[in-house]
Length: 320
Ligand SMILES: Cc1ncc(COP(=O)(O)O)c(C=O)c1O
Image (cartoon, rainbow, N blue to C red; front, side, top):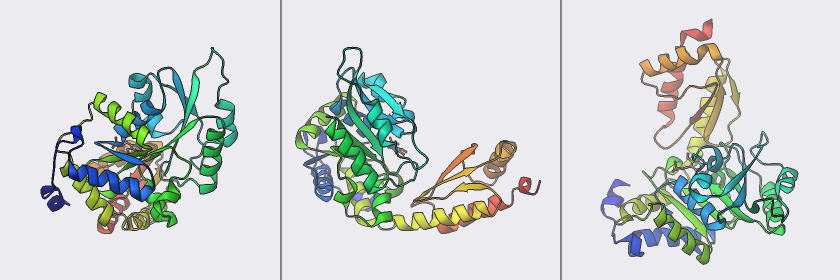
């Protein structure tokens, strides 16, 4: 990947002149069957530009209470986009109940914001939303005049897990944001997919959000490399998540069964501080919380998972 980055042919992407960025955008649009694509530095910026391209000032988007765009992006849609979020409770499987979506769409009435968009996420905290659910949710949204956005930061985990072709994973969505960093292993980069008109609007917002990059081809080259070399290996991350979950369970901990590369484990309150210290002293960095989230990825191969489990087993508190 480093060699591909060093060898990348570059230009000024603010003017659309970077051949490597253009190649990545064309490849992604073609793979997923969209009219156009746009390269961003991060998933947060890509999602925000998407929300701002779909919704105007005072519009509203429906979103899961636990969704990244609502909960983990500092409320950027409201803060920077003047878009009102309508957060809706997520079900245990990560979906938002169809009836809940239906009830939340506001009537045309001057008291209310205009409900413009339904935003979903897949995987949602590592959980895979079913094709049937996605079809029902997006059909309902379109029937009620809403647009649909998918935060597909980890969509390739879904594609590998279910053995899908890319277009099948985005059916029903007007826009999709996909991360090339994280599991796919690029140092930075996300791609937003949509129609030509939509991407033209997003390109303007990207510049306003400070996301116009110049010789961005060095990053796009990493993304192209990741697409070619790091997609199928996501299955290893899924296997490693099972290994990690089994190891944690053997310590008597309650573990949510992982579906892809994310493991959620419940840590009893009395262990939080001591376990954090035990791990840190032995070089295992983890954000230990009541519900601790552990993600397997390219740079955490099986021997590292096993080493982390060994350190976890050595924690003296389990015996108490
Ligand atoms: C589901 C989801 N969406 C969006 C993002 C934001 O991506 P970034 O960290 O590149 O801004 C993340 C980051 O972890 C994520 O998990």
